[in-house]
Image (cartoon, rainbow, N blue to C red):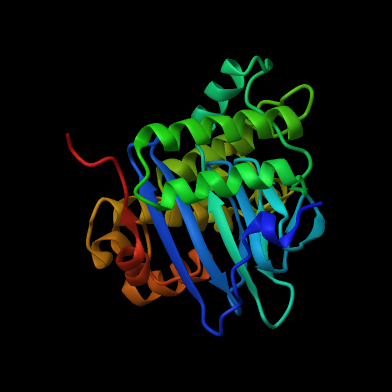
Length: 291
């Protein structure tokens, strides 16, 4: 178990907030600090791994057809393309810290740490491990402060190697959905490539020669999320990328397939927790000063 001192617990305030820090100098990593009270994540997916820690309060989430509760100090681990939700467990909400390493980086660290078999796969979505918690907090502090690139990289690689050794399955599994049929993988790839277009279920069904009804059923069963929800996850992912590049919000909204800026703002806030304007305003880039 972990103690309050271990997690450096933060107070539960009466307002919601979220701050994203980007470290282009530390493997392009992003680190989130947030306080959620009413915000609830819809079922969605990410293309990256998620390591999140509850710094105060309690959170619940659903993944793999099960519901989980995470108390203060709990470290949440989610694989790429793993459908999940997230919401406060109580009226007072929770404070949250997270990092989002790419699958490529995780594969590199696993290989360097002597773990064979492809990308790490984590079958347990929550761990209470005091040593890992302390490593995570040291890493997160280094990422959100003007620590040097060397410090951030060293702490990141150390944490990822430790969590892979302690928590990954003995035989890491490939994350390319080995149980999914070719038709569903084709549908997924089409949604990834055409996220900015008004895609229809009939269009997808014709693409893979399956009836719309059966395609919707199969996609949801095999991917764990309906086609429209998967498409929205892709659109939000691309929107985050474009906002990070400094593109105007209206331009981002239209280029990622949303009807208008207000529609985009509602859906972005529903998934990310803050509206796009706040995401841009509170997001900061921290890296080594130029020499």
